[in-house]
Length: 109
Image (cartoon, rainbow, N blue to C red; front, side):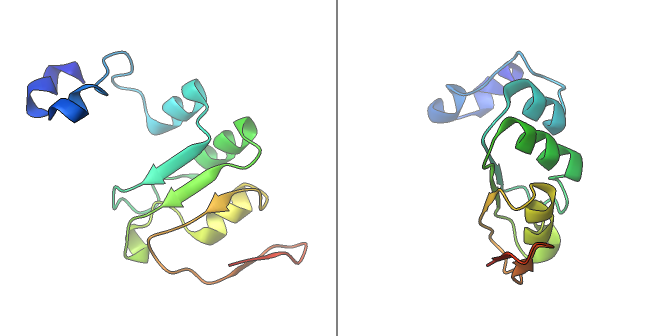
């Protein structure tokens, strides 16, 4: 938030906000309805089923990029992203995942 603005570079400071302090990531997704989510936290499982499903309600093809690695630190797996969006997401990760086969036979690599 703005209370730490002196610790930020000029380029970072322009994006600092006060108005959403204390909101969870799920609350942010439901408030702003993003079409893309980037994971660079190394917090495995941060992108929960509820968060991804809620995002998919607001977006036809949600873009989900859990970029942390190794796989144990990925915010979600490929299988989770495709399952929770019924195969509608655009997915890229920083960790290798096996292909995902959906119940209808579609395979995502």
